[in-house]
Image 1 (cartoon, one colour):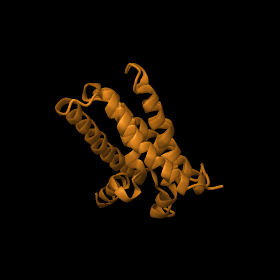
Image 2 (cartoon, helix red, strand yellow):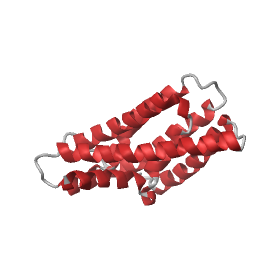
Image 3 (spheres, helix red, strand yellow):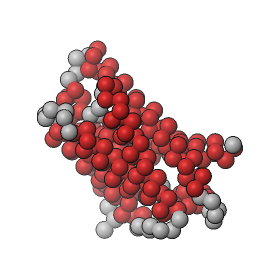
Length: 193
């Protein structure tokens, strides 16, 4: 039980660590286009991101996949920026379909984000033969943290839209633009060539 709590907390802290806020920024741009009445899609968003993240983390932990960390560190803010830009361009359009784009981004870009944590995870579990349970426990921690952040974004969006008359379009545009600004700075800081 102690080992479960350990890896669960590590997964939770991995996402909620505001010193490493790239994960939080990505969740913000993924979730900003959703509202509470799209609960099923929001659950899918979080789950698909965790599946992508955990898949590449597992492949890396078992030595099946290896990618240069400098490339991954650059690609992470790139995925955030791309998602934000797509949000900005789609904010004017009707909501039909744009959520599906972010679901796909959650899965595919989650794979890149999982590789970003792979070296740390490999050091953490060391040469343990059984990496499956730590991976699953870690993934549960990630899932719990993502739910906290995504629901925080939804709550803030609802408060702004219902109490301050901010339109959903403006909420998406402003929030995504702010995240794009942060991600561009991160990309410049992490240029690897």
